[in-house]
Each structure stands twice: as structure tokens, then as C-alpha cells.
Image (cartoon, rainbow, N blue to C red; front, side, top):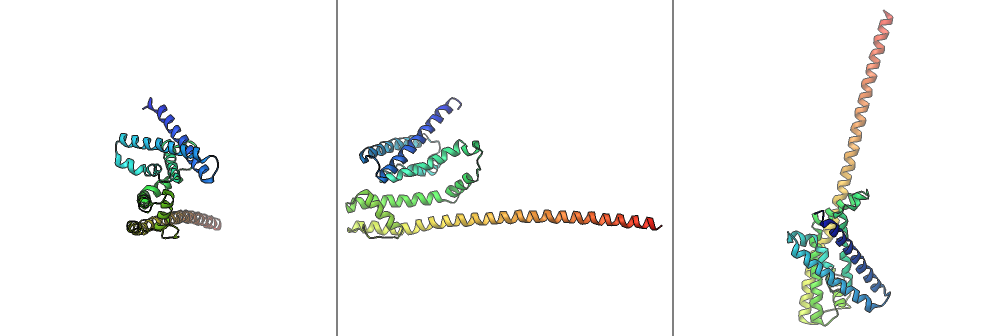
Length: 252
């Protein structure tokens, strides 16, 4: 393990650099800065690199089920439907930060990382989000084939349809396209509704936990204050008793 550690660190540094390059290139492409042909070539090349890396890690994983759950964002990051999916690769950087305990090494508060882990995994957000994105991506791909639309327009249509916005700029005209749209609308309402309820439920629960913790601390402070008051009352009673005793001796 000690021999592999330098190689592992070098590998993680390389992944971090490639992730930042891919995200930066996509941002330049979206903002229209630089030559689009060069940027698209870089994006496609990095897409192949991350796809090969994902498949290799999947093959070498001891528990593929856990790997698929923990690497859901990595899988979304290699979807060739639109360059914007490269932003999902940032989720891997968060895992690398947690893996190397960088927040602990930098003496930063780890409450954020615990809250992130609870929100992503324990609430089931990662599963609902992955299912929602999968439905949208598959529907967009099928819509692109049946309606002879570009992948970018098909993805835009799938997102507006799943979120029930329905701008109407892209609509199905074939029978198969309408069937795909129907399935997407039903699935979108179901999974995206669960997704939003999961998010609101998490923050509601967190708020209740914070309020309960604050109330508990306030109760503890109140109990300590009552104990101190009781101790002071006892001391005052003792002093009063001593004064009474002294006064009686003087009178005698």
C-alpha cells in the first residue's frame, strides 16, 4: 500500500487536472471564447479518457454495486449527449477531497462534508437524481432519432417536458415521438416530484434537528443555571444559619 500511495496520489492529481481542464473548456465553449473546433476536440478527447477510466475502475472494483452507487456522477459525466454533462465530473473532486481528508488536514470544519454525505446518499437523492437524468437522457436520445433533431435540441425538449414547463419550441410530430413524450411526462412528474420532495424534506429535517439541538443546549444551560441558583441558595441558608448561631452565642 505504501508503494502504491505515490502512484495513487499522482493518479488523483492527474484526474483533478483533467477534470478542471474539461470543465474550463466547456465553460469557454458555452461563453463563445476561443476556437470552437479546438475546444470540441479537447472535450471529445477528454470524454474518451474519462470513459476509459470509468470502465477500468468498474472492471477492477471489488464491489461493483457500491461502485455504481458512489460513481453515479462519474457515469453522468461521460454522457456524450451534451458537453454540459462534464460538470458532473466535479462530483469526483469532492470524493477525492473526502478520500484524502483535505478538510481535516487544513483544519477546516467537517460539518459540511457530513451534511453533503447525508444529503447525497442517506436521503436517496443520488438514486432519484440518477433515475431522473437517465429518463431525460434516454428520452432525448430517442426523440433525436425519431424526430430527426439534434442532440442539443432533443435534450432541451426533454428537460422542458420533464419539468412540465413545455415552452413548445420543440414538439413531437410522429406517433413514436408522442409516446416517448408521454412516458417522459409521466416519469418526469413522478421522479422530479420525488426529487424536490427529498430536497425539501432534507432541509426541513435539518432545520428541526438544529432547532432540537438548540433547544437541548438551552435546556442544559437552564438546568446548570438552576443548579447554580440552588447551590447559592444553600450557601445563603448556611450563612444565615451561622449568623443566627453567632447571634445566639453573643446573647448568652
